[in-house]
Structures are given as C-alpha cells and as structure tokens.
Length: 236
Image (cartoon, rainbow, N blue to C red; front, side):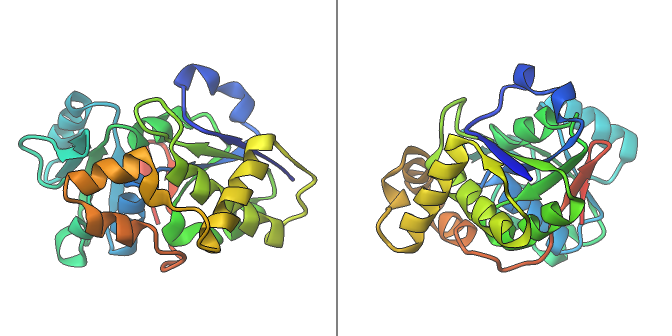
C-alpha cells in the first residue's frame, strides 16, 4: 500500500487519478468531527454541499432537513445548527437528514468525489478509519481540508495518526514526505512535545469561544463509526 497526504484541497488537483484509491478526508476542527458524531448519533444521512444555495435546493426537494453550517467558525444565519460536534446530539439528529456546508471541510469532501472510496475521519475515529481503509486494499490518499486554503497543523497531526494506524493494519511500501512528517508531528503531540494550541486555527476557535469543541475534537478513538461518502451522501 502507498500513502500520500495533501495538506489542503484544491479541486483542480483531484480527479480521475483517484479512481483507484481510497481517500480519507480530514477536517479535525471541525467538519469531519461533526459528521462523524452525527452519524454516530443516528443521523439518517449527512449531505455535504458546496454552498448554502445548493443546500437550500436539496432541503426543498427532500423536505424536513436539518441545515448546519458555518463561515469563519460562526453559524450561518438562519441555519439550525453550526459546526459544533456536540450540537449533533442523538435527540437532535436521530433518523434525520442533515445538510452541512462549512468553510473548509465540505469542500474537501466534494473534491474527493472521484475516488474509489471516500472515508470521513478525524481524531475521534482514526484507528477505525485506518482499519477500514486497510480492509479496502487500495492505495490511500489522506486529504486534509486545511484552513482557508492553507496548511493546518491539527489536520496534519490527524493525518499522522491515521497513517501510523495504517502501518499497523497494512503493508505500507511507500509514503510521501508529508505523510512521514505528519507521523512525526503526531508522535510529538502524543508525547506532549508539540502544542497544537499555538496554531492558527486552534487559536481562532478559542477566540470565538469554541474551546470545548477543540477539546472534544482532539479526543482519540472514542467511536468506531467511519462514515462512507457515496453519491453525495455520508452515512455510517
């Protein structure tokens, strides 16, 4: 198995070459963590969209959807939920359809649509995501959402966690330099020598009052749920 990691998505860079790969999409703070938690808590399906207009059109067609989303970390006006994982509680999402649009994460998921398999991962489920990817038997691309088109250390750390787990469950014969660096960062973070609280996106969320979200999203392996994204829908 080969593992490559991308620090941020650019839809123009992804396409037919992913058709033979499993892509694991990561947006730790907070979109993929929220999608995982929604699926874990019984959501019928989660539909990532590129913009609020697309989401509104789908909601009109399906009816009875929960609208979730944010810009710059702040809940979109008129939406039911923002992008805090804890908002996706069982009593809110069980058996419901959720449409979600976020600044970074949903775009990364949409960019991966050409892949053979698309898995939604974060710190919350990195070991289960690695096991699922290993079982699929294809080369793996870990696609980090990044922040506003830039490198985001929290995503890279999670990519390192996933890659480290993959090495336990598959015969990894090749990895790109960023995968290697991500594994090093994850190891340093685990050992308490890398402080993610000094990073841009982490700090911005703290300033916006989302400290509890950050703490929640950086928990490791608290669920076995790994949403699969197919035909525009993420589901457990």
